[in-house]
Image 1 (cartoon, helix red, strand yellow):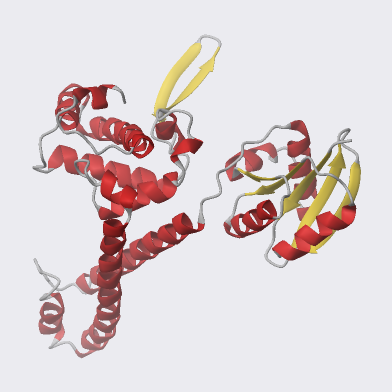
Image 2 (image 1 turned 90 degrees about the vertical axis):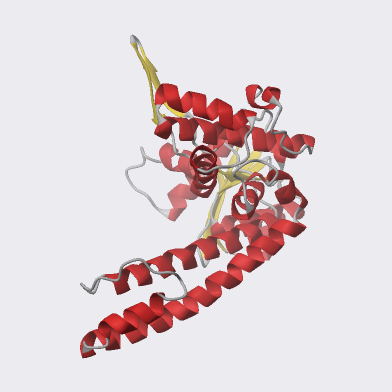
Length: 341
């Protein structure tokens, strides 16, 4: 007899449901959201589990890795897929969610998600923190510019002095400016620290150095892409990468209706942003000439700059994955490398 389980993960306790091959509920319980507790609970059942499913999330990856190491047949499910499957449920509870996940495992109607390695997760955390600090730094600076005083063009070095000069005759604004400038100083220091750390990581990461041989790809973009891909072998074809990160058009076909829309924007947003930034640099900056840049410029003349950047981002996704698979640097003079994408 085959047995299937679904786990609805929560912060303190997770709901667990076990079904047999005919869909009959064998066991339901609330188990502490700890790897040891879940592993012990499944061990106490005395059943040979066929599949155990849990929805992807911050806690799920931690639980998944430990349960996988313990030899349990666990699968990490795509959140969007699970959410759409549960839309028909009139009542949503943790117990029903666990039953639903177990049923998905029994029917085989699920899409597994790759659980990233610890190193990839750490790299992603550093890049996310850097982006967060950069955004808050920009917010503080824009707040300082919103006092109704003409700041004008400044540099990171003279920005604080310019603000102090403008608010010197306004006591209330001076109090606000002093507080915000103190916050800016801390954010700027930490941002520069992360910038230095990211560049050091890129220099010592073999895959990042390989990706940086590509026009328009720097330390942040290379680390973002390498951490997201993690294991290049998980993609059967390099052409799947563009669709995986939502850089391919959506399509709707029904009867006589058949049209393609905008890009799907599914998957990791940070990867799409990084690839689009690389495409923007290639098309708008005086970078080294390459077959890739020539192709993109010709495309921009036909369909416009905005669409060309998206098309170039998708092609970059394919090329960079192929580079990781083959371990070969980008060849600026090789048109076949571009055509293959």
